[in-house]
Image (cartoon, rainbow, N blue to C red; front, top):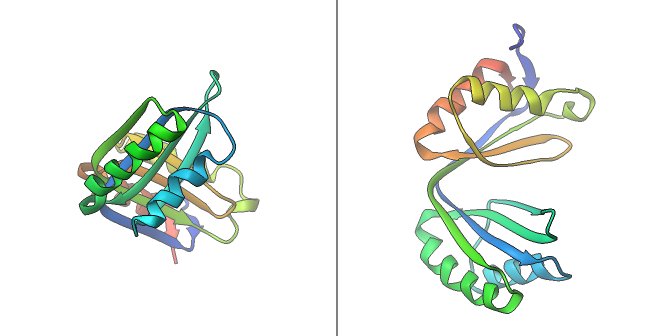
Length: 159
């Protein structure tokens, strides 16, 4: 791991979340729209969203919601799953979301690798991840939350 800390704007973190997945749905137009339109109709918010398509052309959509909302979300997602042909709705309870951000991340190779390596070295398993030009976000178990936050504080100089 790097001896000098990497400059970062800060870390945004949220705990007491659940990770919900609409899994193994046939990839099709409007799939992700159906999921998040239903959440909107229910007055629910997602704090983290990631979608991927596997080698079988099946879509997997995962997102975090407040832990207190997960029963309502699961009911709503079962209706969506029936409409779009998803094979499974899953929930991982008691997770936390951490995002490290920095304005120059787009110009610095290796930021994501450093973030992931620091969590691995701290013994933290990443349940889901998403990145953008300026942000690396990871979903971890609630029990690993403080350890993950400490690992990032060790490698990033937070502004």
